[in-house]
Image (tube, rainbow, N blue to C red; front, side, top):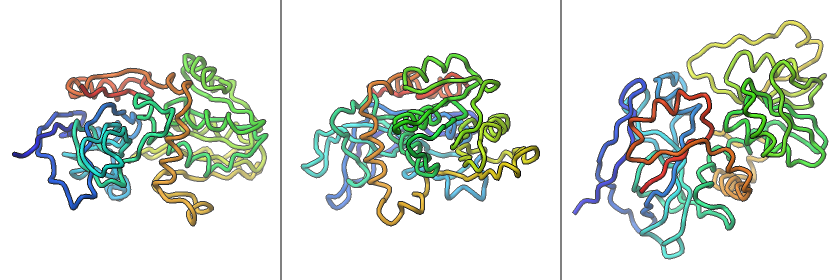
Length: 324
């Protein structure tokens, strides 16, 4: 008898539907069956996908690792699911694992796509794994060193995680900059400073723009010191943005570099692969302070009716999905 599962599909602009579908047959013994426990919505990327705004030229590069369907629609998207292995290799049976799988209540993947949770990382927090992996890649791209003055523009989920990692670097001074004054409490909980854009620090060694806005990029450029590096983390989809290259941009000899989790930075590529990076990101989640980044929770069965509202809410950081 065929086993059925339920998955969330984006079927049109801003429209999500729950669909029942057969679970693929098990492979040659190298697959695991995972019963989902928790998931997470990555608001920034999923909002662009749900709006049908993935540029055609970027469609292949923007595919989630285990995505089904093609952009724009219908597409099964997402990349943060934590579940328990119910069938597979003996070493994994009964273990909680993280997988870069779309929103689905039961799934099969190859065993190498099911990463066991490290000790001290509860499944409820492990849903941050994919976003922490992105933040780790940003810190590598930025080259933050001990003692650096760092500004992170944009206090969304990934921006907050970047600020958390930067603040852990010895003697660094990290300030999270956001238009929402309520993010000050989150910054304090994560161990970094906070400023509104008009009070953003200046003369910084490293600036990361995670705001996904032209205004945030302008703030990042203004915050950069002489010959500083600005890391542009925002993904704008099919939107064109204006970059303020006048004023002191050239006399300050500023550099703007792009960062995207799809590629490991060149300086580490010879020794690191995606699995090692993700395992490291999961270990970095052994920090109870990160629970402050969970901004809400929805039962999986109720997700279609709430999905659009979750994506449109600017207060959303990590919105957790509970499977029950």
